[in-house]
Length: 233
Length: 233
DNA sequence: GCAATTATTATGTGCATACATAATCATGGA
DNA sequence: TCCATGATTATGTATGCACATAATAATTGC
Image 1: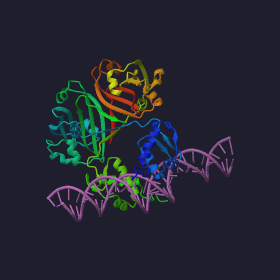
Image 2 (image 1 turned 120 degrees about the horizontal axis):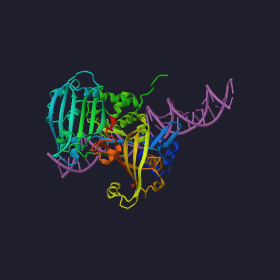
Image 3 (image 1 turned 30 degrees about the vertical axis):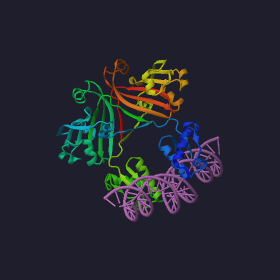
Image 4 (image 1 turned 135 degrees about the vertical axis):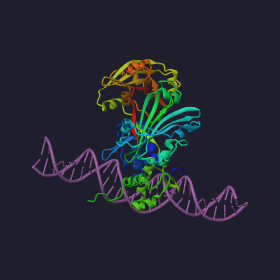
């Protein structure tokens, strides 16, 4: 049997990417229409349409009715970061993942937390402090608050054998989440927990999760010194 | 005229998202096949296919031939960060953007840079040090190296009135880029440049850019203290 | 000459059909 | 019992056709 019977939308995508790459079509310039291209490549317009549609959603080209399709001059600088679950992230490096609960208390939420979670009421929250280790090395310190009004099941969960994130993912569906990356200098507690010098620059990730406008949980994660996030565009 | 004549793939997507949201189909469970769904929703299989295909690429569901389509139990936590150009980022906050070149030298690349850019040759590089201000406040310090072998035009560019990034975007097409986020404690130079205490935790962004395996430029950006990146999933 | 209207055109979407492909399931023989 | 083989089936892709929609170009009326 012959290798490729028909021109697939994937082939078309690659061919077009190559042309852009080779500046056969200059950035910002208009490229031929769907009909012309489908004739040239020997495929149906639907096939060409799919190829171009995907290229557009990849941010490589820009399409407008009647106006036509043009090569993007400055591609959308959109970095996609995968935020892996910590167990997978650690085990992927070959280390054993270990989790330890440090403290578990029920509290009335402090003002800053109420502000962060956008909630008026004085609902009780479950406050968890925990550590995540990669082998014998401290990897991450986690400060976690869970809204007991929206996640009552958490009240009877010890969180000694399962980390809050894994438990929440399994038990509670969420609809929206906000993620904030920032940095902080290690204070006394963090420096002891993460075994880093006092004042070391640490990566932090805050995450607030809702289900239909109902705040579920707020987490602030402090990574070990030297942690970095990488991505390609 | 009636509002919606036919069920569009967008309507189907929303309806299905709602079902997942309302846990009509539990996470991890199998949902009906394309044919059944298209009958239920009153559309062609092609339409249903497109809806499901897009939901899959959004990371909401997982599809496998013969095995069927199932709701992802742990949705791909993919955060998309837009990396805006600094001028736009600053002007969006209402401040004036100001750029200043500190130093411009031609050098032979240090070893670490050669390693980073994955290049053997002893090609000369243009080394630029510059500052970006938001109004009167220091916003970002930039350490930039440009490979003169691949970007010879940079040799005759003063970079006094235009910042390296804007110039490069306009003049040089690129194919790939790698982005690394990390943190660093402010040293003497950074503390003076960014007007922050010595040792302050700073956000840094490194970026390496290629055109067809040919390294173009390496940049390390140091943000002012308190800088943070936010996104929603 | 200028503004409002109409024609044209490129992309956007929907549909029915056909065949391809990858997993799974059922079957039969050693 | 177990493994190889083929049947089954859900998704994947290609195609031709029709009509919708938005934006531009051409035309008309004043």
